[in-house]
Length: 194
Image 1 (cartoon, rainbow, N blue to C red):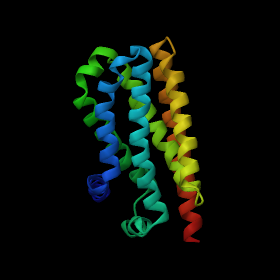
Image 2: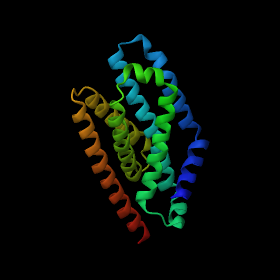
Image 3: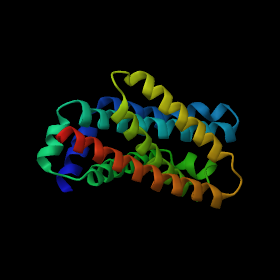
Image 4: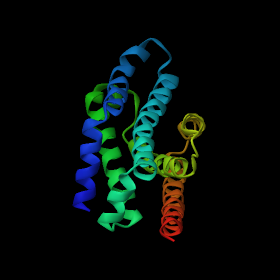
């Protein structure tokens, strides 16, 4: 597991696109300060989740389509550990973005919302895992479709009134989507080994 975490950390350090996305996510609240606060905050959360999920998509794509799969085979690691390592790096990126925008977050996002945002981030990672597994040389199309799904679900969850319902939906979807993504990846890896 430690070797996978080192790989993910090195991958995120050298991925200039992910740092550009983090920078955009940090600067965005200052640009959105001129619009309505409720819509701007929901849009900001959607952008943050999309930026992090785009890094995760690129990471999964490099693991499955390039020589990263050889590293994973040689490591003899389970798909669950790979998924957990990517979730850990995504949560670290989310924390970095939120730390730089702590004044915006504390002012416009209730702290209890952070719980469902983290659970929904895990759901987004599972969706990106599906997309990376099944995209057959149509990465741009699959990314646009996936990011549209992320935006739509984020706006739906943001506009729900009950916080318990938000947390419940995001928790159940995180568990369900993660389980399905891991099992699908295991079956694909098994079929590739045959």
